[in-house]
Amino acid sequence: MKARKPYHKRAKRIGRGSGSGHGKTATKGMKGQRSRSGFHQRAGFEGGQNPFYRRVPKRGFNQAERNSFAIINLDQLAQLEANEVTPEILLQHGMVKHLLNGLKVLGRGQLNRAVTVKAHRFSASAKTAIEKAGGKAVLIEQAARRQTQN
Image (cartoon, rainbow, N blue to C red; front, side, top):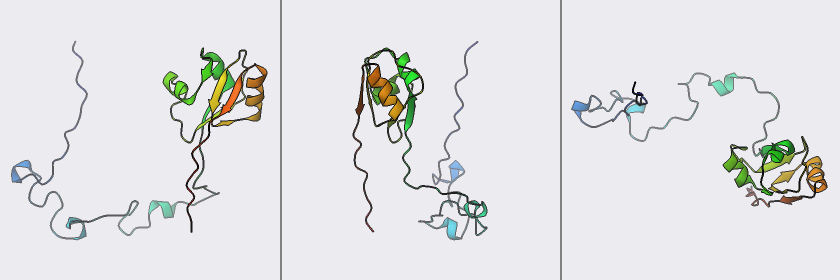
């Protein structure tokens, strides 16, 4: 039995003549704000109804410029056979999916051999465990974040 091709819906081609079925007004209807060129609607606008982001109660504090790090533990590093571990190597092996703002090494598990680990952050327990095993914990410098001036 032959495998079926994946289903892909054809894109709607707007404004390509009356034969296309999407000609003349190009699916924008007759008159009104939405039919005009240059019409733009703010994200989250619900036609004047109180929008979702205002209806939902807010709790706590949301830090706008929060740094999120990809996390890896010592027991995961012990599984790798490499003598030097970098964020790029972890991405290649699929141990980290996204680096986000950098890589942070945490101290769960044990390391039995000398490994040079390059990361953006280390927990205190991870750093001591790496050095105790005879390895090195090398900090990768991050590019200075742009400060906005008021």
